[in-house]
Amino acid sequence: QVQLVESGGGLVQPGGSLRLSCAASANIFRFYHMGWYRQTPGKQRELVAIITTRSTTNYADSVKARFTISRDNAKNTMYLQMNSLKPEDTAVYYCNADPDRNYVSGLQSWGQGTQVTVSS
Image 1: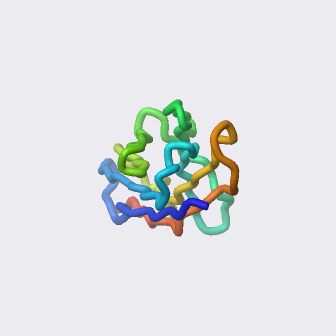
Image 2: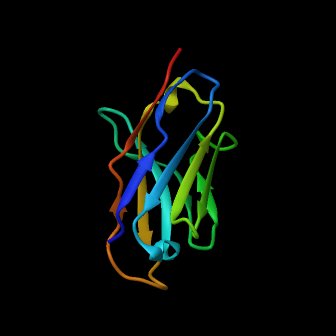
């Protein structure tokens, strides 16, 4: 199972930018579909963006054209560039790793989460 560590969260003003990183422990990172999810108190965790092992991406409608997901397999790291941030983007952001069954078996992994707060 892959160990994941998020970083890059913090406090930012509306309209500002943040870049989240998710570092994975294993060199088999490239065999995992990766994703960012977020959660606010009292609500279910929701998908923000995913990037497959082939670097195909998909985004929640609420973040399209503002957020960009990417991955660097050489560094075992995934990123989320967040621009034009809004107060409603405030949440704990979680990194997820889902094995690509074409290559590896195993369970999904989650990071510990990083807080993003958008407020003036």
